[in-house]
Length: 321
Ligand code: F6P
Image (tube, rainbow, N blue to C red; front, top):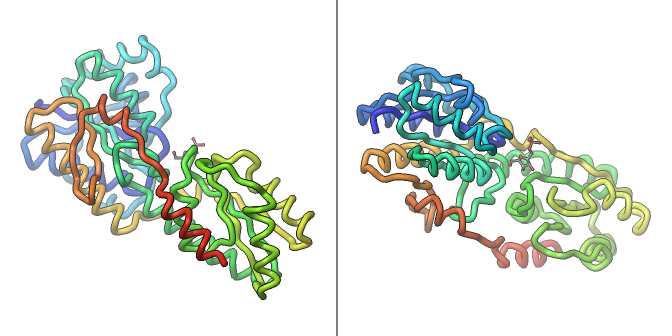
């Protein structure tokens, strides 16, 4: 490998810039040429590619989003798109791709690897929903952003003696939801991984809490749950007499300056991706296992699954009393 192309793909996540910076600077340190590809796989198809220098990644480690921009490419899912991307990679002399993104991006990377491209994936998504890794870039910042919002909403919920129903991101996974339900002291959390009973799991704890003297209530709803926050808030108001308001946090959860943890993890994973290429390995995924940064085979990584820890679900329930 002489020339590495780096791109970000799927939803942006805070810390992606730190990962780009680490790939570029580690790449240059080890004597590679590094090209930045704009707008994910679309930019590869369209040749939106530029050479990166140590300076082109200066002053970005503290920034949210991704300086390379990102996309969810529909064209890249087709044979035509993949072939175009391969031929553009040849034009620019790219012989390895570092793909920073979520599991959808990993599948794109796997598809182009089947045409002969060498790929290394770095997990970047606020959802922490990639089966092969304990940690994904952006997750910690998103948790802290959500926590900050919960604290602010709690001030006004207490003042009006209301129930706040907060819908948080995470796609089909409840990692953000269960963690902020613990850190935010929620009365209930509704997760896509667990069937829920509105009476037993939400209305009862709220009413019992009121009878014990609670003055405000927080319910966290993961976006992957059927029913969503607005309908749940309506039910709570109608059936408990406690005024409930829904807040959908939305894209605020994806923005902002990355936390120290996201910056450091992204930097470590960026370096590891370059080291893997330097060692001559092909089609790898960078992952975190028992807090260590490791690399795995891409096909095997795509088969791996992880479960939301039952311990966290139980903890959230016990501490909501
Ligand atoms: O994967 C990150 C994420 O923010 C999910 O939590 C959410 O379901 C999705 O992306 C939203 O994507 P978009 O910004 O394209 O609507």
